[in-house]
Image (cartoon, rainbow, N blue to C red; front, side, top):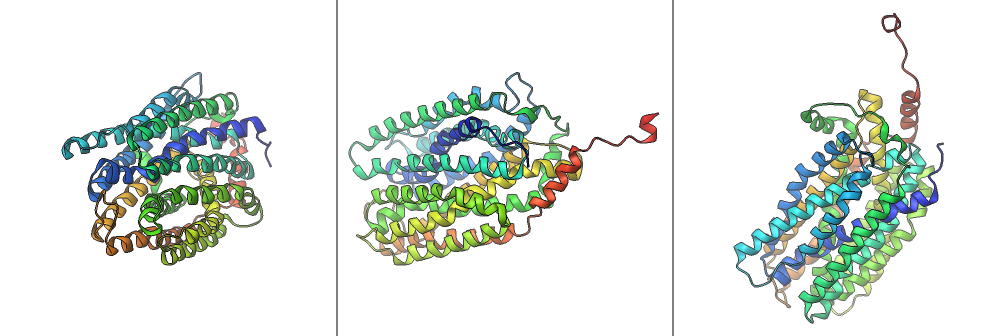
Length: 453
């Protein structure tokens, strides 16, 4: 058992996830809907725009991780990115919502792609080093879980605020102006919270001085062939597709199945509040139970709830969605805290198995596969909606399109959640194995006769 992380460091670091999550959830929850129903792009075109940004993340995130590991700065090799990346990150989020409606399609698509690429780059420049601070703040298995749990609570609050953007749409009065005002307010929150996190971890990341293995760029991609890395990243891809489809489909589901755009914000708030409230419970359960089994139970439960909501919800009544959001939040709370707590362990385990220490690159890969999963999710949702006959910018949809929204909201995420949890059962880094690895790493190197002479 290592020393506990001081409360001010734990809370200060975790508050950074508030701003990061505001930007992340506002984009994931609303951007596809924004492009189709406010800007006027066809669903497949809008989905392709989102996919392009996520494909760029496939290159961008690991590069940021590699660059971060090789950075030398008086501010630390991770903290410096928070200090100097906060303002560009906040600004790139604001301009996302400045696309003028009614412009020629080619110009609109080009502008949307440029803005998405800019946002993706600045998001990675802050998000990768921010996530990578966990294993250098503490090496303790339970403290890492607790630290990620605190992050999950602030992430849940950010999800509520990011999802509140749907309230603007529900009013339907000068939507563009209201949307831009909200974007500026959110952008300021992003900058402030990231800078607060950078201040909180000053001096706390003592292990930031550990030497990073100097390897060629091509070597980093071979990390994906390591069994534990491959399983965890595969889990993240499948989980990101599930949550990405679910999040992006929620506004469509609320508006065209339930009949109220504002109920999406209420349901998201219920989901995240319940999820955040139960984070301590899941953290406590991880002390006595295998994390992999907990995720399996939670994901199966969440899948059953999603299918139930999709089948039973009716127009004019949000009761099923709201009650389902309570159950879904309880199950998905495990998704918020357990999988991210597994990533820091890859740093120590890989050093134990290979003799090479890498830090940020694992979090870059984690974010890469996550963003790729979200890109696939947006693309799948766009194709599914178009295949079922969804009509962009139309207040009333044909019955086939409404069926497609039900399938996209419930069935598709459920399938990917179960598949992700089943794959995670093959993850090898348990509490016991990590303890053995860390104990071995803590031993001084044994001198051979040759080295002694």
